[in-house]
Length: 136
Image (cartoon, rainbow, N blue to C red):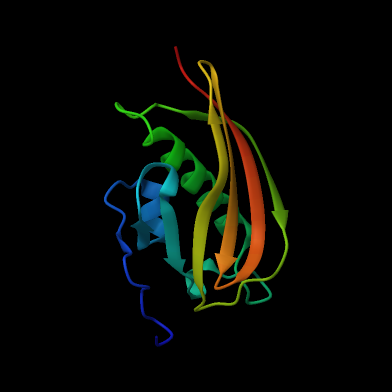
């Protein structure tokens, strides 16, 4: 795979927002709780040191958890992020392929919980957990 190739099975994210349009293109593979989010990092995503800005990691973690949890129900749940924690484990270089994968999830009537790992290849670069409110 060359430095700009998109891994097999990933397709463009069809559901977007103004923020995701600025970050993207963003890709997905799988569905429901097996949904993975992917991004080829580029210079727009860099911090002052030339590596991926932590805010991009936080945004993709939130999107990965929220979309996976919301679209694992039929009809999709209109979840609202109530809280999120993120542990940064390793720097991400520009032009690396970043993937967000759900590790754990649980849904109740009023709250939903999820944990994701953010990976560059086999290297975990961050882990995030969130609580989502389920509007009544």
